[in-house]
Amino acid sequence: MGTYKDIIISGGGIAGLTAAVAFGTAGFKVLCVDPTAPVIDRSNRGADLRTTAYLQPAHAFLQQIGLWPLLAERSAPLQIMRIVDAAGEVLVRKDFNAADISDAPFGWNLGNWDMREGLLTRLDSLPNVTFQPGVSTLGSQTRSTEARVTLSTKKRVSCKMLIAADGRDSLIRRSAKIGMKRTDFGQLALSFAVNHEGPHENISTEIHKSGGPFTLVPLPDFNGKPSSAVVWMDRVNAIKQMQSLPTEAFNAAITERSAGVLGQLELITARSAWPIISQLSDQFFAERTAFIAEAAHVVPPIGAQGLNLSFGDIEVLLDLAKAAPAQIGEMQMLKRYQQARRPIAQSRVLGVSALNRASKAEGPIAARARAFGLDAIHRITPIRHQLMQLGLGIR
Image (tube, rainbow, N blue to C red; front, side, top):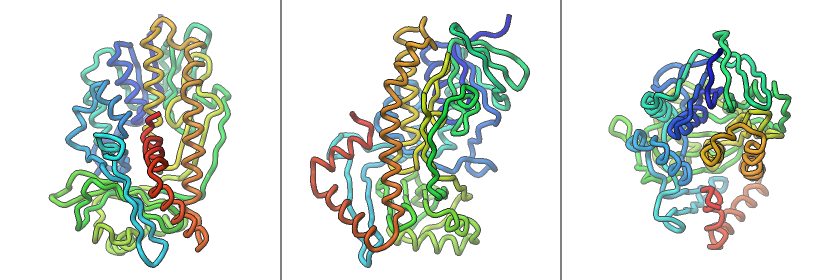
């Protein structure tokens, strides 16, 4: 008789490992596998140099599953979201302050490398969870009562529910013959971290010009200097050109593109580029299988929606599992998961995609339209508050 688990998670990225911690904390027997080991030092080759702003609902969830105490000191609170229109001759700044709608910050920004280290530390404390880096899922066979997963070690493991957290090109989704709709925006996002002259004052600053936003997100000080993470979205050729610049020229280019809002910028990490797409799976489940995170949905990196959306997937699945442990992975549970999550994911994919199209549009007409829309949103208080709450995922 082979090994049996309550849950097998295919994919050990941040979403997959968070799911393993969440279900493990709730007492379920979990196996999580991933072809590669997590990189937890941002100076190491292969490090994920992106950061994530964990918005209020995600922050509460991380507290609930015992993760946040391991992460808090490495995070920077985001009290103000500042949008800067740099398309005209004069910079136009509009601030959105979390104090308008909440006693807490919008979110807390954390390096993905630090998040992975915290996840591994938490997993070590959960004896009912097994994480096997260097092991991949080769395939799965499902029936009404269980899923049987074949691993790259040739071992077969059975479970009540298989969670596909294996990314935007999910093998499990393709094997289940579940389709998806994909849009390629012809852009790349360049991710890196910088030191800067001026303090960020816990303000996340998104600077709009053309080609896509340039966003500075607060990080804790680095080497005794103020530090921020940067996501620079632009056309593929423009980003590739920036990637190839020597450091001194790159520092000059990013300082100019930032409109100097934090003074001189100085690169302190490597640079990594990611394709900008949106994607939505036709279904969020198959027999005995749930799709979460980028196996279910992908959004452009605007407004911190991506990973926060993924945490919502995990939280709903966990709540359903805790409410009826004997029915984990049954069709009725999986349909409830889809009903709860797919409409929200679809609205986020459509909304963020529309924002991205508006932000990358070029020419004086597009610039005037952005400025007019930003001014209207900021000036009309009920609309401003409603959009801030929507961005936080407060429904």
